[in-house]
Image (cartoon, rainbow, N blue to C red):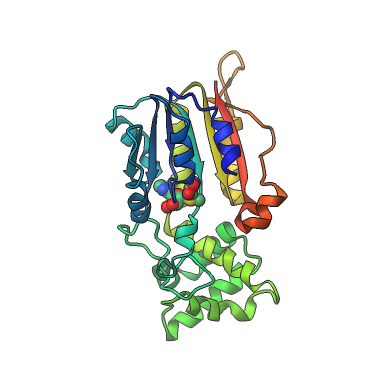
Length: 293
Ligand SMILES: C[S@@+](CC[C@H](N)C(=O)[O-])C[C@H]1O[C@@H](n2cnc3c(N)ncnc32)[C@H](O)[C@@H]1O
């Protein structure tokens, strides 16, 4: 949904924009094309994204290799206190998923790594081999929405007694007996998603980031967020509608709602049939756009 994201940002060629998920740089390159004397600051915590970003030799472009939960701090370091729009295209990039050695893909065998930022120490292997059965149950249920999360965590706990899980194939072999027949790939994708969210603390990063958006976007500016998971989408929706990731909107003494944004579209924008045919990941994408009050 490149076109939809760029349109939603309503780019002012003289404005300052942030792309907090640079990835392969598709969105960033388009934003830069639309700038005149404006600026784009892009973030990604992945080293490979930094290498890709070095190819953009444009005066208006600055890259920060950092977790977007520290966005405000890095903007300040770059002399920026307010911006006209922020884009977030959450989750993992096609480069990450297509690199077997990163362990994100259910298609190839690889180490159970799944770190976007290779400098953090927690890996998927550590979670699978060290977390309690109850913790695994919670992660698979909450982040993977597995119907048999309890059985999955029990199987893993039994398997690791004799042999620790090291490779993505070890994990798939352990869970294959309980994967729904004919839907194994979808099941493994949910398991991998759950682990990836835990390894990278994705929910915490999103919560911290959203709150900073309210502080740095100028009045009339845009927040554009694309998510691929119902928990993420719920957090984004709640933040836009209620000013908080969890809970109800607060009101002032006169009963006016205290919230920084208003939704531009009541319902999220979804990918066209044509796009979902080309890119299966787009099927679960939900794009929410908000305007700063
Ligand atoms: C879906 S991809 C973005 C693709 C990008 N829009 C493009 O056009 O190529 C998401 C990217 O965000 C990065 N990312 C995810 N969570 C992050 C976080 N908390 N902080 C910084 N980068 C993050 C990932 O490393 C990944 O490269």
